[in-house]
Image (tube, rainbow, N blue to C red; front, side, top):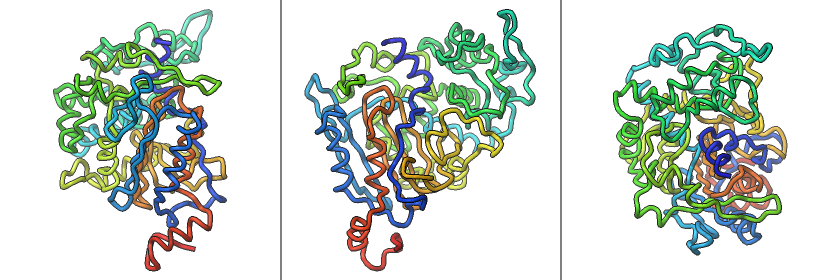
Length: 443
């Protein structure tokens, strides 16, 4: 169990690759212009999972038009200690660390420290001379030069070609990655980057979307550009300005009492607690590694402040983190149409990928696809956390769970359904609530 949890934590491979994220949508029309958050529907959806024993605990926070529209917490954060889920419960956000790193790096983009198409080796010279996997012959790994150099744009959208150590990759490259173990807790980001650079690329840059350690490389790039450790820059440029006081890698003693347990969900629907010495192994003491792609713990309140900043075009409570045009750039699909090999990203529906976010590029194609509006950007995490920002409807939503494997319940589907619904009765009720002059509704 230990190796599997740590491996998934490092890579995020299982964090976002499930196809258990569909939503109910009538036809293929976008949900935009008919959405008004209905707290009763969300309450029913979330509480039902706990009442049926399908979740140990769940919580959610939704903002609409810049105001809190819903908060709810159900079940237990720690079943064995009888501690309920609450607004200030801390959870492991795993791959939802990635969007924070993307924002921090893009502050350096705004400052003119790099261009998106700069070769990676310009700023991280360890990647100079990197080779690309070209198959194997008689047990020997064959290599070829890259058709073009991996760029910063590639590490922002997972197209650099990096292997990720996934056990399903039994190539010589995958074995080499696992042997070097770049994501080991005891590596610094500098050591991580040097080890990763000594692993051949698994594919030619720009030819495949392949989820992996790119965001850890982003964090290392922040260190090189700033001359400071990544965690310090994260604190200075994002966490402190946004007053995200409960988001960190290493838990303080007082925070341990608010930390959720992590549960393993079994095929029969039962849950067993993952021992704290495993689930909290990274967070209970200071580690040399400060990964950009995973590792943070946070609260609903904190993560919503991050989401609201993005929803508000890079600013919150008078503090500007990014310019609005930079947020739009991050939330714009950066995958070229000819890049058709997108691994499990296709399970997210009609989406592309921007800077550390999936981006919805078309309305849901059918009723099995995740509910949502064109232009929304989102990401999720191994413990079934989720957030999204919907500019069309001015909605920001954060959902917290604390179990793995990823998926295995319909919680993300039902949460989205509760916001993006289309039935006529609910639409009429919301129209009455909004008033006859609401510009948000249409028949």
